[in-house]
Length: 147
Image (tube, rainbow, N blue to C red; front, side, top):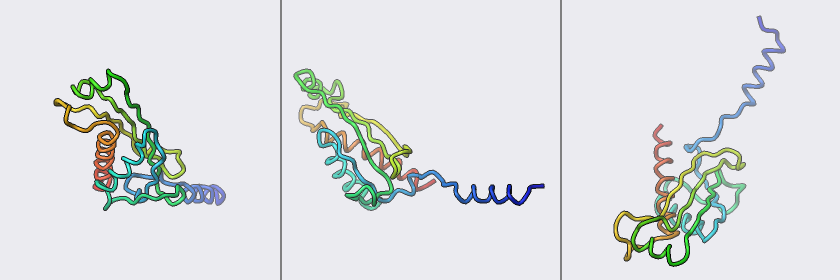
């Protein structure tokens, strides 16, 4: 038989325990600044693809989650040839959604700008990278909403 003190301790620990945040609970996102203006393209794509699902805020304190990312863009003649022929990713990046304290990873994915067909007339780089990353983020959010 449990004593009163043990029951009280158990009860308070259950009340104080917090459930980890989920994608379903995210409705306001702060987009961290990123290299090569990737954050600008990410914001544009979120407005195009997810404006009904999430809102972007300009202050981290108002956000449910923080969207951060890194990218790497190839330069030089080899990168241009690769882009035209579609041989390799010229721009690559990773997008990560963190909880509002920036301590828990809620979602992460990476993408590149490589196309599967001749790409001389297609746009590449940061814009395509942002479109692909936000597309994967959108799919993850939809999946979380229907769980």
